[in-house]
Image 1 (tube, rainbow, N blue to C red):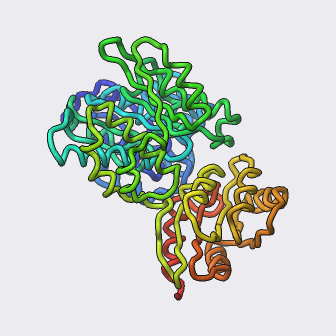
Image 2: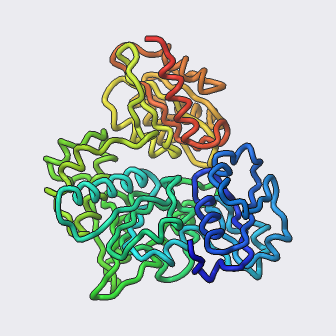
Image 3: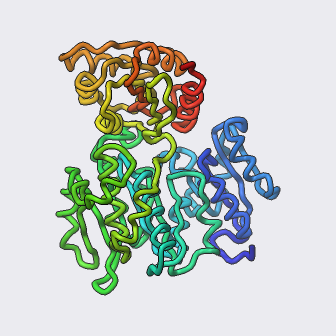
Amino acid sequence: MRCHDTLFRDKRIVVMGLGRFGGGVDAAIYAAEQGGRVLVSDLAEPETLARSLKDLEGFPSIEYCLGSHAEEAFRNADVVVVNPAVPRDSRWLAQAENAAITTQINLFLERCPATVIGITGSNGKSTTAALTAHLLESAAARGSVPYGAVWLGGNIGNRPLLRCLSQMNAEDLVVLELSSFQTEMLASPGMSTKIALITNLTPNHLDRHGTFEDYCAAKETLFRLQSGTESDPSVSLFCKEDAVGREWFEKYRSQQGRTVGGYSAADVPKPLRESFTLPGRANLSNLAGALAIVRCLGVTASQVEEGVATFRSLPHRLEAVAEQGKVRWYNDSIATTPESTMAALDALEAPKVLITGGYDKGMGFLDLGRHIVAQVKAVVLMGQTTGKIADAIAKAGGSPVKVERAASLVEAVNLAAQQTVPGDVVILSPACASYDMFANFEDRGNEFRRLVRCLKS
């Protein structure tokens, strides 16, 4: 690729945090292709980063500092591209006082020629983003639409953005799933998306943000930085079923240069609701959000009928894994908050055995405890939060729930299987992050899928 990005050409670039989900790889390759002298620096050891390092094998000019950070590299850097997982108050970042500090998402938004749609929220953002892209692509396949190619990326993982810039055109659409870590690092007015949607807001990542208010503020940056004019307004979409969404709808609805809309599961037309295969009201809300976006882009309900019917759940998101002895098993490893686990329980109408628990992000489980008592016949607890969730179940009172404790996912699957009879469902929906036992939710979900398929009928 011809070098043309002056931010990188002949500059000392530190990519801080290679990570395992593709953003660090994308930034490192882009900076190297643009003529930068790139150092990838990560506290993780090489074996932990094996997949990402393999993706960089074709770029011998990239150097590495793995297992530690070198303060000198940050002091001498011209540009530091920060992984979203890096805390903003990192002591190593403080050494880079003479460098331009940026992120993969900021770099992309500054350079992208296409119309960008940003989707954030606590639960459902991955499904809403993937569903939006699927509906747009389906509509385009059926006939004339007022846009070109559709790109999907961001927090949804392992999809390059910066390296695809040269292939994008002004008439294209880019659908980005954005985490709170990514939105809080959006840097300046106008560095946001043309269309922004939030699914809902419930406490999450409090180990990073501290309070629910600070977590909400990180998400709100996406909307606060939106800019537009009366003739070409930005679009902000809020879920009418969410308390914070309703509050932000009122806050932004009178702002000039912005079109504000609301959506809810009740807005989904009956024919689309009947053809949609994903279970539960939460998924209907995700569909309503996707429909609100495509309407803003000139796509009609009739143009997306086929797309609604053909969309399937993403891996690890209430994914039907297997049926063993007339017992259905679901992988909902993406559920890293109590609210997402409660939504999963609400979505399935059958006697339930729940596998839950994991890394402690500092959240409360009282509401989850009440949900378990009301809907679950047996629960298997694992991970750091075992005691907290057990206490929440005990405090909920009501009908007795059989509570088992497991030291591993292997033991949890076996214990869950012992609690089932034909007609039951078993759900892995941890309500917690995976870091106490697994590298990430995908590793947890993949191992669950493997264990379930190894069970004898």
